[in-house]
Image (cartoon, rainbow, N blue to C red; front, side):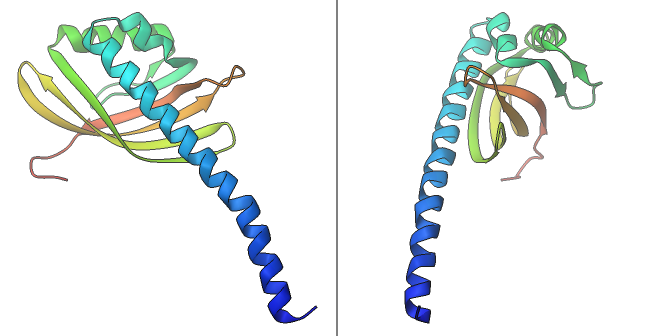
Length: 150
């Protein structure tokens, strides 16, 4: 086999496997974006049970300046406390998603208001695919961005 023919076969093989993987990554990102829209809508409506249901049973949240929050029930209570403290108008924006098997890592930014003052937030979420194919938040960490940060 000539070197040119070998390169053609290698290119064809790479495209055969890489293009479907890129499509899968885009599908996962699209699903996570939709989940984020549902998350923000439920939070903003005060439906914190629906927010908590978007987490795995053994999820862990890492709120800024706080202890680890373990499990769905504790996470629901955390979000109730956040609303009671005046956190409103949550909006999430996915910047990137990387998938490896049943896990996907999302990097994003968010905006919200705390007692009427605007906040900009950065976050990383590890999503875990469930046996029914749904993606749920498994690990969730965020903190406020400094003024002027992009």
